[in-house]
Image (cartoon, rainbow, N blue to C red):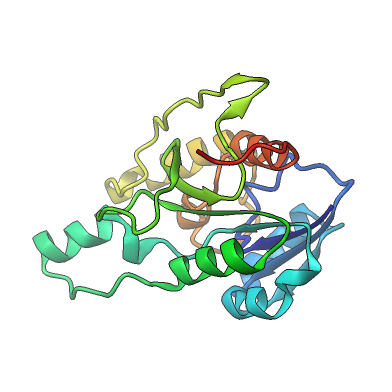
Amino acid sequence: MKILNLYCGIGGNRRLWGNEHDITAIELNPQIAKIYQDFFPQDKVIVADAHQYLLEHFKEYDFIWSSPPCPSHSSFRKNFSCNVGAKPIYPDMKLYEEILLLKYYFKGKWVIENVISYYEPLITPTILQRHYFWSNFALKQWGGAYKQFPKDTINLTGGQNEDADIQIKQLQERHNMNLDDYKIDKRTALRNCVSSELGLHILNESKRDIQPE
């Protein structure tokens, strides 16, 4: 398939997809894009605004995965505003723009991932692990049964500074992605990853002709 991997980060969702597909990855941060390219040298990596790229190129692909920025939708950011006094921010509605664009214009298979939001989602998603997923195919089916994914056991919402190195080590082991040689915010890059097993499950489900409930 021709696959478009938007807001690709360091590629947690993509790690188990194999090399038989023609994959284009879009990432705005050049440092993060460089890491993705190091991990997946066979993919085409473009440093660009993923939201705009989607609008201009969505017709060129068979399968699209998008993970728009999540902080403005998260309970953590909302609680930070209410309890600590940070300035409130608008939820970034580009998330729903992409859902509606793909739902009504795209003829291939698609999935959009985000955090479980602090508000009732405007369009009903599927929940797997700590994520919301919107798609035009069923996500829970696995050989005719429901696939269960374990809950996260690592605290992803902060923690004391002295625990940062421990958390980074745990996250690197979980995602099987080593960032020791890179000078970036490792914890954020790793926390933004979708587990590779879940990413593979969703890609496999996109190949089944089953509609979402």
